Amino acid sequence: MHVDLLAGGGPSVPLELQRERVAAEVARLEALGATRVDEHADLGVHWVTMRDPEGNEFCV
Image (cartoon, rainbow, N blue to C red; front, side, top):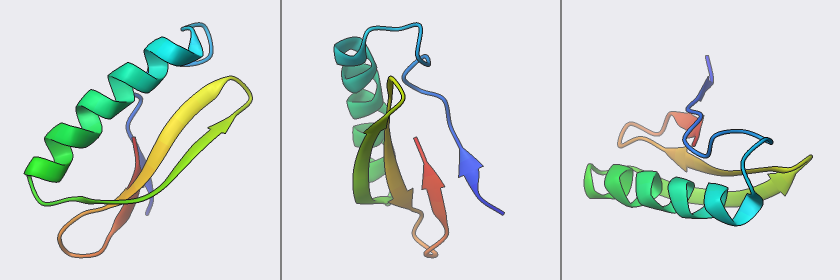
């Protein structure tokens, strides 16, 4: 199973605002023990791939 958390707001939100929203959520999740894997932007959407402390991958 792969979980996607829509923190940026989707393609209707300006890309720079998406980046700010995603960065805030990524920082919160890193403080809880998640790690950043990669950063992406495609089709007007910005997201970050992360892993939880057990190694499960998810996207924010």
